[in-house]
Length: 229
Image (cartoon, rainbow, N blue to C red):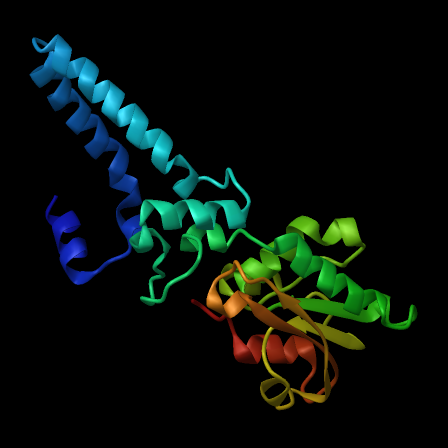
């Protein structure tokens, strides 16, 4: 309980205490059951209220509806707090659900860039997801579009390596031409992935085709190391 209070006061994220939610709920349920044992009418009322509240809030935590429907529903409920990000900005959807939207469409945009390459270059191409969400989307949907398995420096993806150590082409989902030009001699923005329902950094994501790395990719991978956050 002390840890919970400290996190609430200091603005910690809700999932920091995820591991203790279940025992706390169980302890509360046991205490409430004892208090309601001799109050049958009140027990029935609690069950009804909790069921109604649970059904009302269910779409807020589970992706049951398409984004436009959910956004309109949250607006009618006045649940602005539910759509605030951990940076304090406002989204049409709760952040956790916003992060789940547009994955297939983003991978489809990457596939258009990949399949526009000359056929001889495609087997010598590495696709880099700029963060774990973009890399995860490529893992899930990439096989449907004939894409190679992605790599990423984000988190423990980095430990799996850069794939090919000497590719002819590197497709990078994210970044800017200016940033990537410090690493590659030839950088072209070849497409964009747009999703108005996503978090801010995922609403308009550039897709770059990069050639002529200034340092071999295998050495660069070790030099840069993993990127956390």
